Length: 233
Image 1: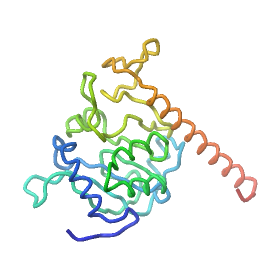
Image 2 (image 1 turned 180 degrees about the horizontal axis):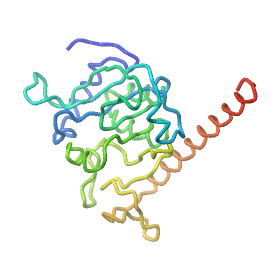
Image 3 (image 1 turned 120 degrees about the vertical axis):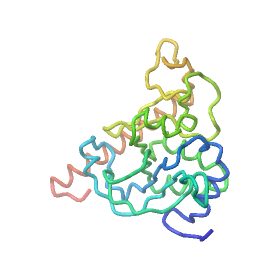
């Protein structure tokens, strides 16, 4: 395999990581894809609403993971570098917008458990997670096992994608680790859909993600206020 270097590091290292976790992607249909972009070049700012997201213009590179088409020389989830021109033109099922430090943390873990690092970075608020398709489209594309959509509680796949989403306002939202539901019974601290327990770790990580979101929102508001007053932030 040709070694290609970019801001994401070496492509062959990402491919080797995906190959080690091939079982996670085994039920996904050809064409299913996720993308990663650095927030610094994404045009996406924390706190933007849906209209702002659609108009966000970026200029940079995207790391894409895509299930190869039937009959391709290579099978399974394949990594590639693609151009990124903005949120509206992105043709992926899931889009991850990462702070530079979060990308570096994933790169540093490529020889180990990078997917767990990715999960931790999302829950810290260092990676924003945008779902570009609805739940049923994702199920049809084979994301069921990857995202933990099964309708019964039980141990999840090691390293699967985390269950914290980013809503249109840019704020993180907790969803059930087992089924993806976002409704919880606060009396029993369990998921309404599958009765899976909300763990202390879940609560601590969503709290951390919310605090990080609020800090970014206040920083952005202060920068806008300073700009309007003609003061350097």
